[in-house]
Length: 173
Image (tube, rainbow, N blue to C red; front, top):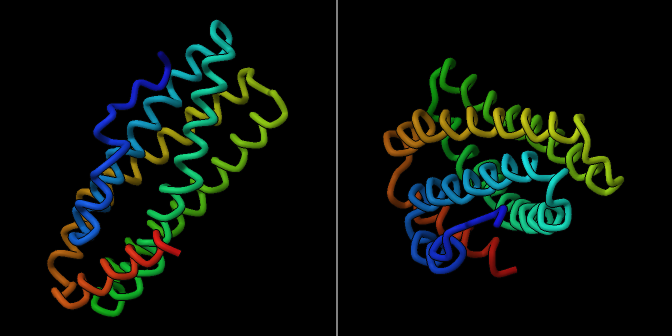
């Protein structure tokens, strides 16, 4: 099976971690990484098992269009605006880089969806997957290593509670 995502990552975690927004963001990174793994398997099997690969691709798209989009909104609408006023110049530049990463990831993802919609599963399709996966893995590593520490150092418990409330509201509207 191409997408082999662990069942425990599909249900239960989100509700358990929304009250702890930084843990939720990291848990979401793990779920995104599973979809990146799936994209790599899709690229490897698109020629030999087209039907299953395309079905798995649809499931990846469904996740990224829902949970992935919410994750980006959590960062850009809730975390970054509270964090940046407290940052030094280099740290602000780092966060701006993360925002640029989001734009680049969105562009690559849009290209991947376009190629899939056109049935273009050749070398360019696999190249987009390769670039998207590499880009996203680097981005996640930066957020796990640096952004998480900045948030823990600079955000107050009341701010984290507000972020949590916004995350919950974003998922229930």
